[in-house]
Structure formats: structure tokens, C-alpha cells
Image 1 (tube, rainbow, N blue to C red):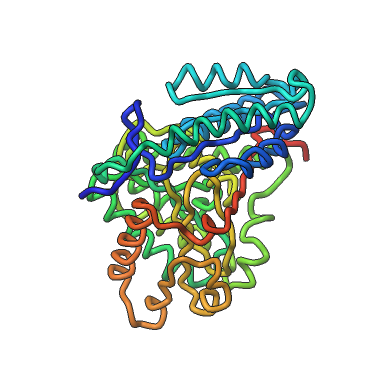
Image 2 (image 1 turned 60 degrees about the vertical axis):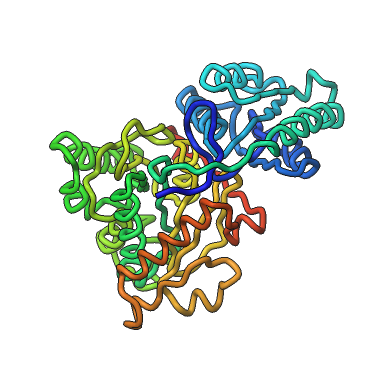
Amino acid sequence: MEFLGYRRSDGRVGIRNHVLILPACACGSESCRVVASQVRGAVNIIFNTGCSDVAANTAMSQKVLTGFALNPNVYGVVIIGLGCETVPHRELREKIQALTDKPVASFGIQEEGGTLKTIEKAVRAARDMAAAASRQQRVPCDISELLMGIECGGSDATSGIASNPAVGELSDLLVDAGASTMMSETIEFIGGEHVLAKRGATPEIHNQIIQICKEYEEHLAGAGQNCRAGQPTPGNKAGGLSTLDEKSLGCIRKGGTRPVVEVVEQAARPTKKGAIIMDTAGYDISSVTSMVAGGCQAIVFTTGRGTPTGNAIVPVIKVTGNKLTYQRMEDNMDVDVSGIVDGTCTIKESGKQLFDEFLEVCNGKMTKAEAYGFSDIAVDHVCRFV
């Protein structure tokens, strides 16, 4: 099975052809926004960190920024730094250039003499990249080139019985066709990790799934916190979810049933094909951020209560099993699978519906969040003050 994608020189395939305007730190974010607004085909992110941080958090920020640049949906990158951030724009540029031959340019606001001079140079660089990107054509690519991220947020009682099982069916269809899928949010495995671990392709992977859940709880306990204090969220409870265990049992269904072939660290690029787990925090936007940094070309996002979230680099397909939510938030929801709840559609039928929608998005169809230009980014800090 094939789709039409943009073949990169490293062999990977993008489903979008963006020029990414990337801040090296929070102080470069607004300049990046202005540059992207001036160049058709450019997208930007707003970054909330990158300076005045401990070493582990700086390393995570660099891992995410580098992963964004390497995402196959990105044709080229223009970096804007301030000039006194922890990792200067030149160093970030060199990190990226050591890993790819994509066009990469960088500028420092202090060095260039202020915002306007920086924007002028960055716009010229982005314009040249956008012109070159426009000459690249979509070509037939095998479905095995795809890596789909799986996320949930604003869950309710319909998530575990409708939208998550439908996406689980989609995941199985993709894996069976040779593609890869990635599920994250470790905290939302807790209480159901023993069920998820049974899907481990090897005893080592089984044990890894148990271990990342154990380590997450221990990390919070070391800071005097209990993961069940924030999970389920108030919205989850209002939507009918009573405990973290109940939420987790519904959450893991969206990962399907195929063997888990690899467990990767947050924002890391997988090395295997098939069903994959990424060890991330229990916050949907930061988990999406990490999976995009890990190379996912698209995200399928289930929600019962509804969310407008989107990402600048990859399309986010919103799926709900709550008919009222779809009617109330049709401007944000892409797919309604509430037929599972009212008995007019099976999980298998809904999975096939999602499969067809996913391929359409890979072939160029815009999601609703993408059409709005939404971009939500959050970097989870590995070191926190409490």
C-alpha cells in the first residue's frame, strides 16, 4: 500500500513540506512568529524554555529542538536565538547539521543588532528555503515509511469504550501493513501496566514497561507527590472516570493489540518498526511534543470532552466517541466514532474509517487544527521544583 509523500535525502518521508522557524530559546520565539508570518510555507513554534536551567532540562530542550528539525515533515530550518542563551544558536545549528543535510540557517538577535535586522535576514533565508521546497513533488511511498503517534486528552467515559478501541484498531491495521505506531504517557499506563506489558515482544520489553511505570511513581514520590493527586483530572472525573486505574485501562486500548517491539525514552527516535511505546509524562501536549521530536509524521488524538490542540509540524487528527462533543465542537473534531456507543457502527468499522482518514491526511488533507494554524508545544522538565 502506498501514499504520496516527500522523500528526504536521508531516506525518510514527510507528509508535509514545512520550513521550520525554530527558536533556540524563549527569547527568540516572538521573532520566529513574525518571520513565519511573512513566508508562505513556513511554520513556527513558541518555545518556553532554553535558558537559565539545570543541565538535565537543558539537555531535554536540546533533544526536543533537534528532533523538531529532524522531523521528516520539515524541509529546512531557520533558527533564531538571542545570543546569551544556554546553548547558542550556532551550536544548535551545528548539532542539527551533524545529523542531516537539510538546509539550516541561524541568527542571533543581539549579534544582528536587534529584532528588525534579525527578522530581515531570517525572512530572506526562509524565503529561499520555501522557494526550494516548492519545487519538491510528492512521490509514491510505501506505507511502511509512516510513524503515527497516538495520544489522548480530555478523556471521558466514552474514550475507553469507543474512540480508544477504534484507534487501537487503526494501530493494528497500520502495523499489519508494515507501518509503525507510537503510544506515550507513562502515568496513564499505571494500574493497567500489567495488561500492557503482556504485549511485550520479549521478556525484556515486558519488564521495561513495568519498570518505566515504577520509576515514574518513584520519581514523584521522591518529590513528596502522588501521581493519583492529578490523575484523573477534574475534567476526566466530570466525564465519568473514577480512578487512574480505570483511566489507564481505557487509555492503553488505543495502542492496539500487536506486540510492542520497543520502549524508547522521551523525544527519542525509535530504531524498530511496529508498535512502540515512548516513556513520557502524563500531559497530552508535552507527550505530543515528544513524539513529534521522535519523528512521528502525524498524531491521532482521542478525546471525549473535546480539545482544540494542534501542532505546527505534524497534523493532529482529533477523534471522539462522544456524539454530544462532536456536535458541540465540530469545528475542532475531525472524526466522530460515536456509532460504537449507539450501536450503529462496530469498532472494526470505525478503525477502517480512521485508517482511510489517516491516509487522506498523509496524502495532504488538512486537519481542522492544521487549517487554523494551531501550534501547542510543551517540554516536560525532567527536574522540577516542588
